[in-house]
Image 1 (tube, rainbow, N blue to C red):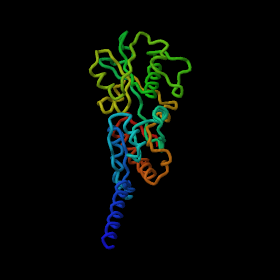
Image 2: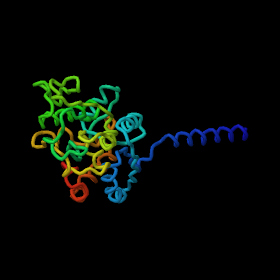
Image 3: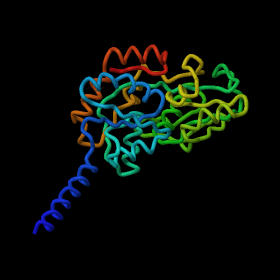
Length: 271
């Protein structure tokens, strides 16, 4: 009898141990982020969250797919790298259930050149590199149209979306789609005269400055709100204690000043 009781108690302890292994630590906030500027901004709130009893664990990703996959699977509490149009496109394409919990900052898209110092100096027949994913390609093509480099359909818009196949007139330029993270390196290694539309975070990581861009998005309209980088979470977790603590820590004057001082216009706080 004693032997049987001992075995039962051992099994209870073992089951409890396995149950504990699968339980996430409620005092740890795990956030996936691009290295620049997202992870750098998150670093600024570690101490604030620590004072509230939370440990902020930042997981750095170098692409736009894995942080959403990890969030959907529950490996992350949140991620911080994307804007809402990209999130919506990702949900639609992948059957995921992610949502925006807060708008944090805006990164103006820039047009950068290899050996070109003005839009008017872009040579005839030049290659123009643009990011290939749905929402960012639309954004890049709208910037090219803004600068008179291509013509798009009259009803082209962020909501409708456009690709290079929709270009009505390329005006002799060779518009090439490549993965967003590869655009800066491709531009650097390209022929003189090549230009590229580059996402703000990848431009920063490549050492490019907004002041050196041939053109940037016109943010006088709704671009900042449309393309604001967000704290994304699994649907239903928008108001969890962890996420509210994270957002409150980010939306402070101290973080806003850090963004202004660090990025000199390449990143703009919108809270």
